[in-house]
Amino acid sequence: MISLTPCHTLYTEWNIFYNIKTKKTIFTTIMSKASENYVRVTTRTLSEMKAHGEKIAMLTAYDFTMAGIVDKAGIDVILVGDSASNVMAGHETTLPITLDHMIYHATSVVRGVNRALVVVDLPFGTYQADSKEALRSAIRIMKESGAHALKLEGGSQIKESIERILQAGIPVMGHLGLTPQSIYKFGTYSVRAKEKAEAEQLLSEAQMLEKAGCFSIVLEKIPAKLAEKVSKTVNIPIIGIGAGVHVDGQVLVLNDMLGMNKEFSPRFLRRYLNLDNEISKAIKNYTADVKNQDFPNNQEQY
Ligand code: KIV
Image 1: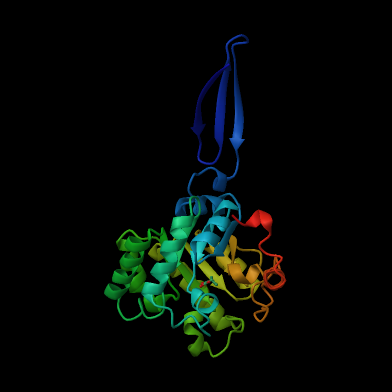
Image 2: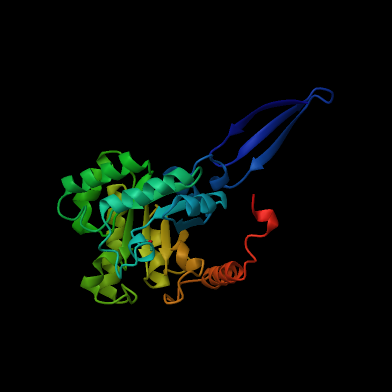
């Protein structure tokens, strides 16, 4: 049997075997999912996933160790979110985190990742003033961290910044709906775009982001029906958080889905672990072992 080089179609990879005795050629499909077809997930992978109806799984990460675990588990996209301001630094909002802080987190994450696409949030105050400052901030993140793409919150107000960053060859993910950097404008973390006018505006902002050249959009905390409509209207992948199931992918904050934070319990959050309790149990056991001189034992010393 002679094995020929795998040949690539747009979506499916074939192994071709030629059996010398029977003189027959055998074709076998070895992969069928776009996300498995690539060594690295790219913005192009995501668009192929949408085209083939394969959902995109995205999670946040902020450090090397967790990013490595998340990446090896097979996530498609890792977001170095400015939610680091809340979950890493303990701030009430995402506003205080700086560009230097984001670069520190992004650099640590990139070192731990081999497969996933790494997207980094441009933090509040680094892209709203003017598009030249936005580009300078974007270039700093890309150059210093080695990340693959950036995410910016907002629509038409920051169109010029988005366009300038895109012109520099940097892929941009949009973010509409409940954009946490505007929390003081909203005054509440409740669901956005429930009214017709805001829903229509959100849809047209999504179309504008697609036209500008964004490769994907996050929709946060909006009615599921509206998110579905946006996802069907635009061709770029829509990633939801609190936006229902009829979008092209989902994102959650890693620490929240691992159950490390009991206080934060929005309806959209599914906890896959109760890590808060598990960590607490382990630390109580360790403390007791130290106090009782059960740790270290004979095998745990030199
Ligand atoms: O910063 C973040 O974690 C985010 C996600 C909630 C989408 O922007």
